[in-house]
Image 1 (cartoon, helix red, strand yellow):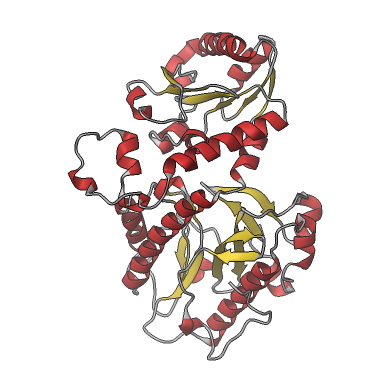
Image 2 (image 1 turned 120 degrees about the vertical axis):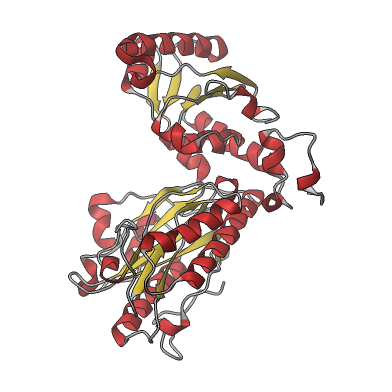
Length: 430
């Protein structure tokens, strides 16, 4: 993309112009990204003989079209905006007063006002509103691809799906084709992933610099959030930052808890950042002013071993079962508090596939194939059941034909690793 002074560009401030011309878009062909993603969804629909999909998850709408509008509001108030997609047509039903936000998107053929079929919007007339929604949508689908076709739906109240099925359509879940589409990234799409990661790493650097005893977790976490928003990221999806005893067990929501001296402080970024792409890596810091204890270093180095062993076995063509069988063996003292996944897919959020631990695979796991073009987050949480503290580490990687490429570049903490420390397993060549 050519250089320009985007602050001076005042002639067109529509959504697409401003987003495509933002500094983090330099060098990225966002039109190619959008068209690739749209083709991916249509290809997965065709494989399953799905004539139309109706997407209401704002992240999936953004994946298929590039458009965004009040993402968190739209998640909570589905269906306030939704997308009808067939093999030939892309019709966006946009929230009241917002139709202009899709101007210029080559992925959207037509924009119409949404008919919000929710109790908040319709009150006691909700059933009538749902039937009206289904009648109008059914007529439109029939005119585009015929009556009785298979229609994929997601995240909409049950009444709309029931009414559409009563109108003669075969209604199926749209999750599978969309998740399978999102799983494989193009080279141009990877530029968006990396732009989001670089911005998030700036924020994590500011957070690390700000860390000191006496701050609350909320105050420290806000440093990351402010930096992400200032760099045109979207939002932090979770509030996973905790200190001291609140690092064990994991999944403590950030709170008004004061960080003490010489404590571990654990962070999982979970940032929906630039271009809507997920920056998902985890780091654990030491609050100072003293040096980490031997126990803290042991926890940290054990987590490093787990992450780098599992990065080292990832390869294209490997089955999910094979990965589980070869993954790092969690010792008994850390097993009860293990992270619920060994690794997971990552794109615009956490996504397919979920790669489970060996012990969890019989009950929770499913098989599949790791493919080149998947971005994977390799997880570790190390903390004893009833222990004082724990360590959360996570790396985001791209699976290639040759192995994995490390995407998350924020460094690990030298102070938490013994001099000359090497993981028990060879580090992958990345």
